[in-house]
Amino acid sequence: MKNALITGGTGFVGYWLKQHEPAGVYGTYLSRADYLMWNWREIKWDYIIHLAPVAPYVVVDLAERYRARLLYCSSGIVYHPEVNTEYRRDKMNGEKYCAESGVDVVIARLFTFYGEHLDEDKAYTRFTKAAKANKPIEIRGDGSCMRSYMHGKEMAEWMWSILLRGKRGEAYDVGSDEPITMLQLAKFIKSQTRSQSEIVIKGGDELMPHYLPPDTAKTKSLLERALYEY
Image (tube, rainbow, N blue to C red; front, side, top):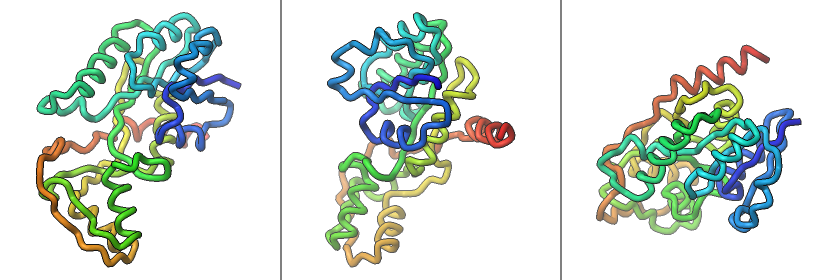
């Protein structure tokens, strides 16, 4: 049995990783409080998945000390230089630090997801909650902003595959490659829930209006290899 450490493991991504652990892997999922206790640094880990919103210095040290494979979780935001936020800079710096560290690291660039345990403020969750209550579905921006949605189950399967089979030093996109506008999403959810909700365009600024869907070819090749191995 291989031991896997998952920092920031009690959120949406950690929830789905735990539901779909591969055979032979046992995960320890750290909450924020667990992370601050630091006792996990004294355990020998075979795998480390870094989800916590902190710089990866400590987990890189652990990976080096125990010769563990590290999966650094980045974001599709790295493809958007026009979005000059602290979050994007943190992800860019994290990727660079991991890549230059010399440890056995792979990088997952996460895009947009849906499913149980998703943040209440995410568009998919807000739209679904409003539709089920027959309340107005409010769209921020003009409705043309795009995303592409992958279910948490599929996301977890892709991430485990990247950790176990990804090529050292490579980055892999994780997400759906079928874009959908916020207006299309609202109409889809309204239809699926048979809601009487009104769709309301709120206006205002949108984050990443020029959305780029993930390039999933490299990641899908890992999944195909996994099926072949079985």
